[in-house]
Length: 347
Ligand code: SAH
Image (cartoon, rainbow, N blue to C red; front, side, top):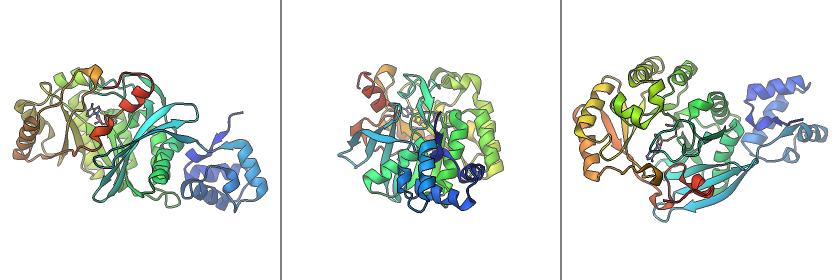
């Protein structure tokens, strides 16, 4: 019989589980704290539980397992890129970055991705499976343990599409922000999506404090459909009206990611079209010179082009920043380390 994935349970789910087993409610709180505050990896370490209960839990439940398969440290800025391996041998990446306000960890939400964005390395091998809440938490727990640093913010911008793993991501966020767990406020969490509109509406209902980031990367349907297949299912106007509704309902400003690709989406006319599309949304645009991925053949826009694009946005009162590049000496384009490890060609 398959063992119960106890580390993926939110506190209310764990309380139900304990109730079904005839255990008092406080046991759930104790187990939850062992798993998510002390982050132990065996039931034997849960010393305030009766021996009989520990034995019973080890027979019926499992605690998820994560290993560091590779670790790259940037000589330029100390950014650390982890290639993690789970119990079934599947691998994902996380990146630990230092900012002025503390350490931020970029985590993966799926093994691979099925969204097919043309400029992205993570989707080249397709989707293997989604991560469990426990596995996403382990990316954070392991990075904290290995680096000895307190992780003060988390971004869901690694491999995978978080809204394509909706229920697990919601439980993950619940556990992450629980006062009996890491107690990380969702104000310090960003979730990035390529634009799954139904997922955006579902997320809106949850009224979470997190920052929603939309990977827009184009100013019109023609360019967006060419570079992001998801646009064929959810065209830009549908996506942007979902964003407007999200802003209205939650009061949270949306951040838009825009990777500048030479000759594809970086002209002054693209910048002007983008301003018109984002009018009145209080939007923030994050400009990213695209990370070239060999198989994709895209080049990054020149610095001058990036600056010109930013200037047009600002002249039109659209707030825009250029993302600071970190770890550029350690192959930081998302999904490349995993793919190289699986035998793909390195860039
Ligand atoms: N699936 C989610 C989150 C993972 S991708 C999403 O699409 O938002 C994280 C971010 O990296 C997205 O904005 C994505 O579009 C961007 N990205 C992917 N490949 C890139 C590349 N080669 N250069 C720059 N940004 C890239």
